[in-house]
Length: 453
Ligand SMILES: Cc1cc2nc3c(=O)[nH]c(=O)nc-3n(C[C@H](O)[C@H](O)[C@H](O)COP(=O)(O)OP(=O)(O)OC[C@H]3O[C@@H](n4cnc5c(N)ncnc54)[C@H](O)[C@@H]3O)c2cc1C
Picture 1 (cartoon, rainbow, N blue to C red):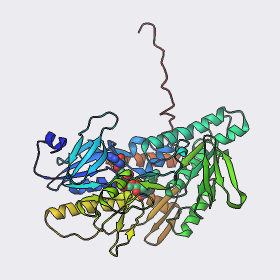
Picture 2 (cartoon, rainbow, N blue to C red):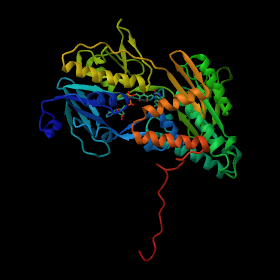
Picture 3 (cartoon, rainbow, N blue to C red):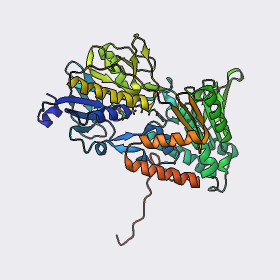
Picture 4 (cartoon, helix red, strand yellow):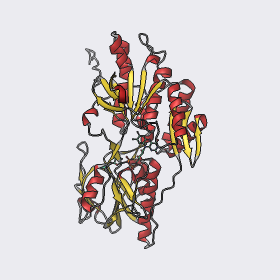
C-alpha cells in the first residue's frame, strides 16, 4: 500500500492517477469527476496553463493570472478528485506505483498507487542539441519563461533609450524570433506591434518604430501546417507590420550579443541582437522516454512514445499516455503523429476518461479517432489566418474566429471576462496593460525607513 493510500485510509474505489494538469490531463479528469472512481491529479505546477496565450504574457498584453487557473479551484466541487503538487520521477509498472519528488521543497507523498494510470506530461522546446542557446534565446512555453521574455523585450527598449552608441543601440532594438510556426508568427507580430503602436510615443531618445524584427524559418514558408496560400497571406500581414521574414535560413549560432543565420550561398551572417526568442521544434516530456524504456514501446525522433490505437502502452492496458508526448498506432499498424495542438490533447483526454468509465461497466470501446476542427494562427491586430475544414479565412474574420475560440477554451469564467475586457481595451487604445519589468535579475528596491520607526 502506498503512502498516499495509507493517508486516505485505503478505500476500495478504482484508483485513477492522472499525471499532468495540461490540456489532455485536465479533460481526462473532467470526464471522470462524476464516475465511481477516486482520481488523483499530479502536477508539478499548482495551475493549468493556457499555453496558446503565453506569448501575450511575454509581450505585456495579458497578465500571468489571466491565462492560468489553479488546479484545486477547477476541481473544488469534485469530491472524488484530489490534487497533488509534485513531480513524477519514475514509474513502477509492475507494482502499479509512481515515484514522486517534491517541488520547491513542498512535501509530497513518496509514492502513489494506481489501478489505472493516465500520463499526459506534454512536451518542451528542443534546441536541436545546442542547449547553450537556451540561456540567450528564451521560449514562451512556461509562464516563468514567458515572464523572462517580457522582461527582456521591455528591458531592450529601456537599454536602447539609455544607449548613446548607435551600433549598440541598434542591437538592442533588433529582435529575432527563431521558428515561424504559429507561436513564432504570433510573437513576431506582437513585438512589431509593441514597437509600432504601444510604445511609439513613450520614449524620448529612441523611436521604437525604428526597431528591426526578424523572423527566421528553416522551411521555405511560414506556418507550414497551413495551406501555402494562407502562409503567403500571413507573410504579407507580417511584412505590413514591419517584420522581416527570412525563410529557408537556419540559425547556426546564438550568443549574448548576436544571432548567426546561415544564408545559403551568401554564407553565414551575424546579426547583432540582444533579444532572441526561441519558437522552433519541440521534444516530448522525459516521461515518454521512461515509459518507452519500461514497456518496449517505440519512440520517434521527437521523443514521442508510440501508444496503441486505444492510447494505452503495449502490454499495459491499464496505462494510457496522451497529448504532445505520444504518437498513436493506426489501424494498419503505422504510427500516426497528430499535430501538437490543444484540440488533439483535449480529445485524447476525454477519450481516455470515457474508456475508463466504459471498462468499469465492462463495455467495449472503439479506437481513438481525432476530429480535426481546423487550424488558427493570429498575426496581430485584426489579422489572422484560419483553415477550417478546407475553408480558408484571413484578416478580420479569421481574427474574430481566433478570438472567440480562445475565449471559449480559456479555463475559468473569471479569466474569460478579464481577457475579453483586456482585449477590448487594447483594441480600442493600442495599449498593453502588463508591461512590467520584474523577475530574476531585477532587484527589489530598498525603501528607506524613517528614523521614528
Ligand atoms: C507557446 C505555445 C503556443 C501554443 N499555441 C497553441 C495554439 O494556439 N493552439 C493550439 O491548439 N495549441 C497550441 N499550442 C500547443 C498546445 O499548448 C499543446 O499541444 C498542449 O498544451 C498539449 O497538451 P498536453 O496535455 O499534452 O501537455 P501540456 O498542456 O503541456 O501539459 C503537461 C502538464 O504536465 C505537467 N508535467 C510534465 N511533466 C511532469 C512531471 N514529471 N511531473 C508532474 N507534472 C508534470 C506540466 O506541468 C503540465 O501541466 C501551443 C504551445 C505552446 C508552447
